[in-house]
Length: 235
Image 1 (cartoon, rainbow, N blue to C red):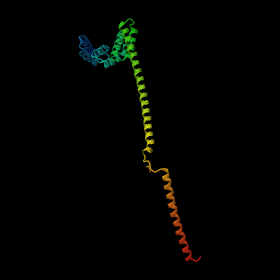
Image 2 (cartoon, one colour):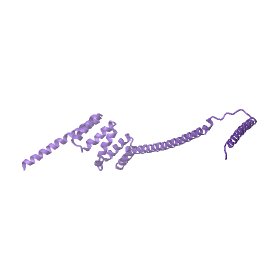
Image 3 (cartoon, helix red, strand yellow):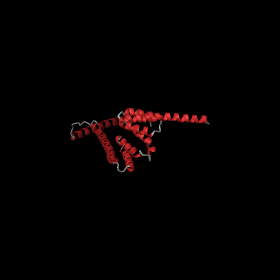
Image 4 (tube, helix red, strand yellow):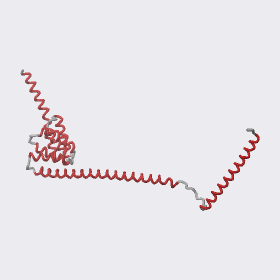
């Protein structure tokens, strides 16, 4: 029993020795942060998280170092992972204020309004939170109005393009119709003879008279041939 107790004590000592470096890294990270060495602080906070991924201080301060390095996207992700743990803690008001700052820097005004509202619920007298909340709401309204205007302009452009396409189709149809109507006009027209109507009438009568003479001659020749054949044949 005594031997087992010694073993357990040894394990606790080992665990304590493992936990100690992450706290030391957080403290060193804080010193680098205060000196403005944010990239160095970033490394130390990440090292602390490798030893203890649940360390609130390491992750919270890492988000601050990322914010100072203008890495807003990752800073927001780090803060979001702390959201379930921050509720009811003494850091909650500051957490929501910093979340709002990150959202403002990212131009995520809806998220910023939500965060500063939460900060004001916890600290109603926080003037910075009030000012940032008002500013975030104003920027959100402007963003929404701009988006509505862009949507409206896009709809108008689509309508104009549709009208232009319809006008172009109508012009094409009119052009096709003109081309169809012009086909007959482009066909060769009969050439005028240059004769007067009286001359044309006289020519017509002369042609008819000539045809009649030819027909009479043919009839006479047929009659003569028939008479000759009747004499040769006994009916």
